[in-house]
Each structure stands twice: as structure tokens, then as C-alpha cells.
Length: 444
Ligand code: ADP
Image (cartoon, rainbow, N blue to C red; front, side, top):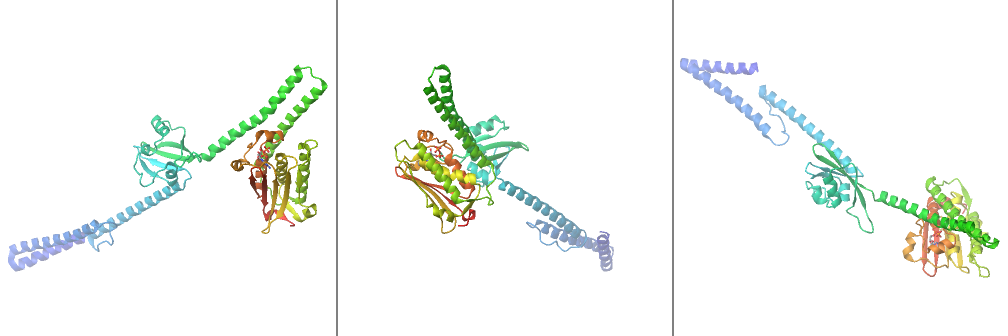
């Protein structure tokens, strides 16, 4: 600063001296004035260069190379500008990270301004609510979500609970349920979260159905039992009648026992860890037990004098070649026996039941039970493994069914890497099979 002042003073003195030499006192005055104007013009030019540099759009490239106060001012301004740009860039990066995190959220997120207009929404919310994250920006959410329940929720202003709405992609065959909730924040703004609760709702409905089914299954034999007990208590029955009643009561007791047993098996299957590869059971042991149970049930269900079921198993001499299978023996036995006893139960005596165990060329083996029973209509096939689903209720009950057999079998097989496949033709018979992976077989 002082050097600029001295420079200007020097210029004026030189101008004055030159003026005085050329034209006396007037010349000296004119020389000083001219020198002052020259100095001023020079400074204005430098100031203009700084101004032009500042007027450039975006980040000004290089600072004008100036010395003195204008150069320093330009340097300082450039430093300030850089700092500001860095702050803006850091803020922008943080915002992008934040938005990316909200984008990754499994829940739908919508940011609403104080007028209820969409400021931002993630892809999940767009999918849930049928929004377009770009086109619908600044659109009032009430115009896009036209459910009366949502309108009532917004006007009531009580957001302490979530609201259940049908999802945008909901169809009668595939209903989608959403849980939506508003969270006020800032100055009148709202955060709207949406969650797909279809699976939770379905599980809840299944739980309710299950409890209702179990209660129903237990209530029926209980009603029969209490009826018989009252009869025994009030009527003077002879010994033969008493014996008959007691036998009927025992039947109902057994039915309840089977049901409770099956329920316990199901809950064990659901609650226990997957069977490992450390317990090995010879396939022949499983087949023998299937054969014994099938034959015993057939004898029980065949009326005196009628021909029993024809039970066909592979020749016993081959059984040892089937090797061993890894997993929980009790679970495997229950699944395989169930398929065999079902075939016996649903096929009329005299009908044929064929059981096979076929090692497969690519490794693994297929267990198959086919029968010449009534067959199952195609519409029932996908639902057969649901708990308590029966095609013919009375036939299932008469033959001691609980409606849980195939659900247990499917679950137990799945736990051993096998998939239960059902094929059937109405009026011709059914075929139930399970493919076991090579990893669970040895000694084949
Ligand atoms: P249930 O105890 O009633 O037999 P399951 O779960 O074992 O229950 O079977 C479900 C339903 O599948 C049965 O009620 C029956 O209608 C049908 N089903 C099962 N196996 C056969 C079969 N071999 N032939 C015809 N229908 C069958």
C-alpha cells in the first residue's frame, strides 16, 4: 500500500517537475494533474480487470496476475470462492449419500413439504404407491393417493398409528397390503413411510385359520365324546351297548391323539435345525417299515371277505443296493410312510399300490408311490399340502386322517433337500414322488 502511494507521489512530482521545466508554475500544475489522472486511469484499469474476472460464470479460471491491493483482493476473493465451492460440493455429496441411503431403504420414503406436496420419493415408495419419482414431484400427495381412508387419515391429523391400504399393484388374485404412516418434522413438513405388509398379513391370516381349524378338529370329537359320556351317565345300558359306546369313545380319543401328535410333529419340524449329514439310515429299513405299515393299514381297512390292497414293492433282494440316506430317520420315515398309508387309505381294497426307489443316472434317487385310487382333480393339487386341506373330508376322517399328513411330509422332505411332486388323474389314480439329492445318499 505505501509503495503504491509513493509511486503515485513520485509520478506526480515527476509530472510537476517536467511541467515546471516546460511551462513554469502553470506547467507544474498541469504536470501534477496529468500525472494524477494517469495514476487514476492505471488503477481503474486494474480494478476493471478484477471485476471482469469476477463476472465470469462458474469457477473463474485463473486470477489476474496483478500486484498490489487489487492483486491481493483478487487472491483473497479466489480463496473465498474456492472454500465456498468446496463447502457446496461437500454438502451436495452428503445429500446424495443421504438420498442413496433412503433409496436403499426396504421401506417406501416420501418427503412432503408444508403443503403436502412431494419433494422427493424413493423407488420403493414409487412402486408401492404408483408414483413417478420425477413426474410427480411437487404434486400434492392427496391428488395421487385417492384412497378415502388416506384422505380421512390426513384430515384427522392423528398419525400415532399406521394406516393399511391396498397396494397399487394389488389384484383380487394377488392382493398387496401396505402399511403407511406419516411423521411430521421441521416446519409443517412430513415424512411418509410405506411398508409392504402382505406377507405379514397373510401369515396372520394363516395363523387365525390354523387356530380355527385346530379348534374345529378338536371340537368335533370332543362333542361326540361328551355326548357318549352323558348317555352312559343317564341311560341304563346293557353290557353290550356299553362296550360299543366305549369303543366309539376310544375311537374319538384316538382321533384327538393323532391330531395332537401331528401338530407336535409339525411344530418340531418348524422349530428344529435342518438335519445334518451325520445320521445315516439304510433305505431298506425305511422301505421295510413302509411295507409293514401299508400292509397293517390295508388289513384294518379291508372289510372281511373283500380282497386286500395289492402292495407292490421292489424285490427285497435289491434293497441293499439302495444304500443309505442321511438325515433324521424319524422324519424321513414319517414322510415316506405317510405317502404309502395315504395311498392305502384312499384306494379301495383290491386296488394296486406300487412303491419304487429308483437311483437316478445323474445321482440321487426317486421314491415314488402310485395308486389306482380315485385320483385328485387338478384344482385341488396345488392345495393338497396345505394344513387341513382335504378333498373329501368324510373319507379322510373315516380312514383316520388329520388333514396334516401331506403338510408334514412336504416339510420333512424339504428339510432333506427333496421336493414332493404330485401327479394325478381323476378316476385313474395318483402318484406322489420325492427326489433325494446325491449329497444325502451313500453306498449306492
Ligand atoms: P388326510 O389326513 O386327510 O389324509 P393329508 O394331508 O395326508 O390329509 O392329505 C390331504 C388330502 O389329499 C386328503 O384329504 C385327500 O383328499 C388327498 N389325498 C392324499 N393322498 C391321496 C391319494 N393317494 N389319493 C387320493 N387323494 C389323496
